[in-house]
Image 1 (cartoon, rainbow over the protein chains, first blue to last red):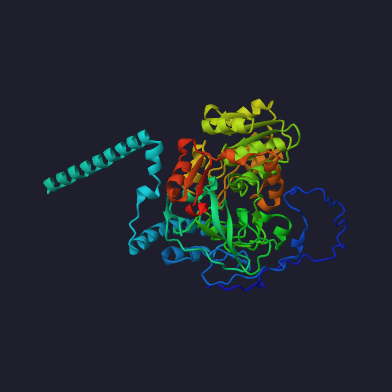
Image 2: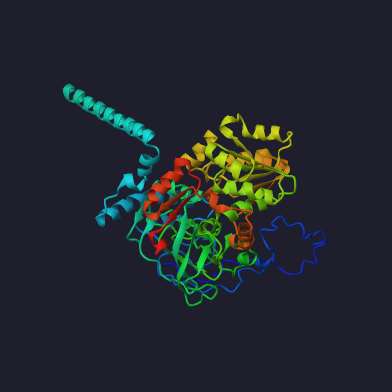
Length: 178
Length: 385
């Protein structure tokens, strides 16, 4: 479990102070040249670094995967679905990469897909039979788009029936050829 | 309690066995949800496009409700208060919050530095359960939640959590000057609101581009703007150039984001193969339609992976790109005033009021644009108790 180390020594930003030895330092500075206005009420406090008075730290009593681009776990965080199972293992590995890396995001997408099957297994363990029709909200199709829904269903049924017929026919031919 | 439960792409259910939220931090509040919207950006989650969207999570970042419990440190709100809860979670103490960048708080999302904490928006945005539920945990309750004025309709209030501030900030980031031509790509709720708000900044002409006729009809009346269906245009960029005397629009707003239609390559790479953070068609059009030295304002949501955009044109045209999640808390006082004075009437956007028990149908209706849906609102059974 990740603990809150508050601020690791790896994170620092030494800007220096006196730049007077650099000829012309700051002579063209223009505080009006601020494309962030009015979105950002500029104070430049970030020049001080990660020095603000942090809010009280939420107790870390579930596994939280932390970005390696920050020194600590944020003061608050969500605890909705801690990583678990195979998808959790993939997520833990993904979080070893920085946020700019495909090595982080593509495995997370894979983990999400695996998580769907883990969710079905969890449902079955709890005696819940997943109801695809209801979960996909197809009742709304019946209510608002009945004609197209019936056509799509009929076409789908025909495709399935046709595929099954071809498979059966193909199997029969194979058994005759033996 | 009853809450939306995500089960995988295109699958959600109304689950009566979800755990009640608890106070997990002294700054928390528990809110009984009175209204909760499905947002267009929820559809990115619903369609499986946002990495680290875990099965079992509850979505919903647009909600209002009544505070039923507070942590020991909460002083600014009390139980019984009905509050607007901004979609972004902000501490109020970090340097970004102090600079009113409330959508970029550094103390709300351990999973990523590029995204702040957002209710019900995957673990990429902090792993918080959202408000498509009977009850929801609201961190930093002293900072974000704003008491709903007595005179305000709950349907107006719930749209002040995201849609109105995001549309307003889209126009604000456009740096619109009096007389400017503003093109808004997307006639979803955000695009509609951006078009409406463009006038508040003095636009001289507002054009909205989309492919859904019913939405174009709506925004044409609601925001008194010009509308064009890109399906009937051979090339939307050439059209914009022609209708702006070849110079291009002064300001273009991308109010579509990751699921833009209109270009096969972008759809393939961004929506089907997920090799980029969404389809960037609207952004392409915005960059290519804006004038030299113009401003492109982006409020459409994209995934965290890279996106293909015509950067050469950005450089050669000297375009300024401005983007952010809306700082709801910063904008709320002004927007409440606009609602009070009748300048903005948010609730007109609501086309569907759906019981939370029918959340799966709600998502399907919104996703497939059934029944001319513009904005669906979910109402939990406990909202009436």
